[in-house]
Image (cartoon, rainbow, N blue to C red):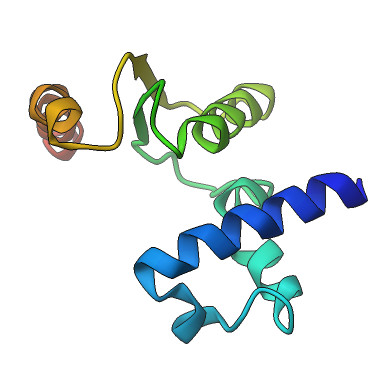
Length: 114
């Protein structure tokens, strides 16, 4: 398990360089427990009582791919309904131009539910 935690911390450190998450949560060393607490793959252990509309759409060459796939697999184990899409592509506009069509349809269908 320590190797898994170390890998998560390494990913967190890479992500914080892009989105200033350290300003919100704190650095990943001093506030490691908060990073583990607020990481979505850990948050889903406390499933919401009301169903949510969740879509995960990720390119297989995206730097988020492995964490999104792990999240998808955990959601399946926990029987949390969600839509999961993986296709060739990166974390860039070439991928998003196509993906946004499916995401907008997903949002339209789910926001219109009563």
